[in-house]
Length: 390
Ligand code: KIV
Ligand code: ZN
Image (cartoon, rainbow, N blue to C red; front, side):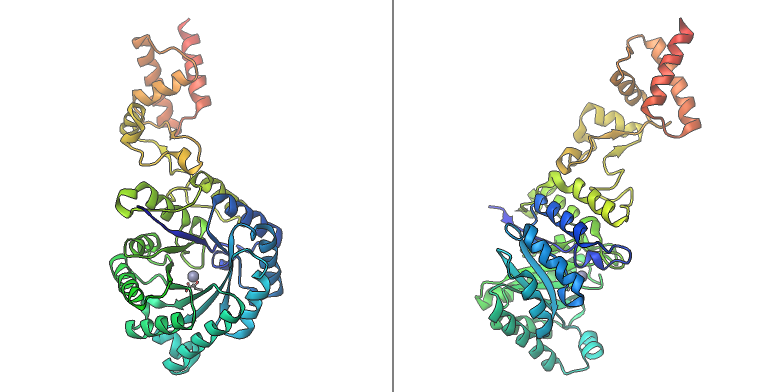
């Protein structure tokens, strides 16, 4: 049977850290409602200790969607942060406290200037304190992919014994590569199983080397049960793992991953466009799944193949992700088949081969001059051609 992967969306926390992507509380609620329609399992709603506005936004998200979607928010490993998270999410049906603390030498030495044991103890104390407030606690070992493995494991083992119910392994600076990250997850998973505690293993990747989706999929292959993502891959620097890419990767290659998610994929495109509208940050045109050109075909060879059978050049249908149906862009490289299809779609007859060839030559001349030929150009071309013939 296929494993179900839990999807946490952190667009409203990690995604919102992007310069220029600040949303007001009404926009956050609107986006959270769309995440509910998308059927994400968990929404990370913010970082309540960071400001009164963030605290209030998390509370409002809980009020609006916290009856059906699990809500979490971020805390550093200090009591005041954990209290702020608890107070902001406590009315949700399924609240989860998320604690983060670094495990790499760089974090331990440069950020905390304490011994490794002292930093680990901070994490353990934070988890123990959070458990006095709520049963569900996630612990993120920040910068895990650059951490020394035995210290990382010792930290994980200690916080699990202290009561952490989810262990989240972040590739904080997007340094990992897929085979290595997959191996890290496999090793942690194996040791977690030997602990015999009920813990969910989660991953959180960044895209600095353009590998966030690949690393996340590799982690799934090696036992990760939960993934943290953002819509459009929004996030600091090169962004976070793109939710739509991971979800469709698992779905299109189900025979490889043997997993499912509960995401309503038909809402993906709408969610992407809502985020673009709210933040003013556009998606690159060739972005997988949600880019403007993700389902547009302009080469004549491809257009001919697609008109014979969509599966020739399409691995998923645009309808599956809620995008407009396949778009054939007419250019000078479009062949007769695509042009004929466009002419017939407008209700014109193409049965006279000689007439059609004359029309096609005019189309090629226009496409050379104009680069892209739109429906209204085709309409004008046919009408003009036919009136000259009469
Ligand atoms: O990138 C990161 O390490 C984070 C943690 C808070 C999970 O965002
Ligand atoms: Zn992050």
